[in-house]
Image 1: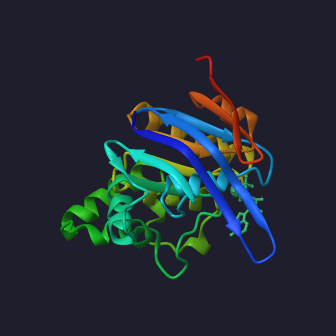
Image 2 (image 1 turned 90 degrees about the vertical axis):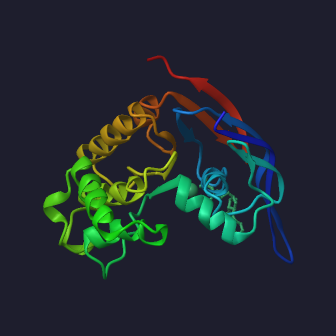
Length: 227
Ligand code: ADP
Ligand code: MG
């Protein structure tokens, strides 16, 4: 197993109300899996992805990644863990407007003590992978949505992460660009990357190897897709 979540709970408390965003989540994910998470708005999909990405912490339960228990790690150790293991893709691309595309991608490598020349070649390779090299010196606002998402995928993969987390990566894209993004994710998975993707698209979920359905903060079904 790459990932084992046990009894994961996430409560949000304010003075008046308590919201259970996640309740007793049990989820194991093996190396090389491609998991699609589906469910209605508000059921806890993003909360689950944020906990998997260590951007958020569970209020109870255990998160093991490889041999390591993550829930007790301090923020600095988690930041190092994220840099070394994770790549993120968001619905809204989240590129930095003031940086050129190649600079956005290189930023993912900057805190890793990688020499400039190697950073350059890795960035070039990542841009080639997603067909965005001809836009290297453009700014995000000069690109179409599909191009921005491909640039964001290049940023996610440039550090060669073991796990790619994608929250509705095709949610803001038209059909053709959505298909391109799914093709790229499938290729990355074929090459060994483990992928966990939230989606509202049943046809995109069918392209994953496994589908996990959520409702009211719980996992209700987990099924392996026929290939
Ligand atoms: P989804 O991604 O499936 O639409 P979320 O994970 O964003 O759902 O939200 C799950 C539940 O947790 C919802 O009821 C939502 O209102 C609540 N929630 C999410 N973030 C917060 C927050 N920062 N404070 C309070 N409640 C939150
Ligand atoms: Mg969400």
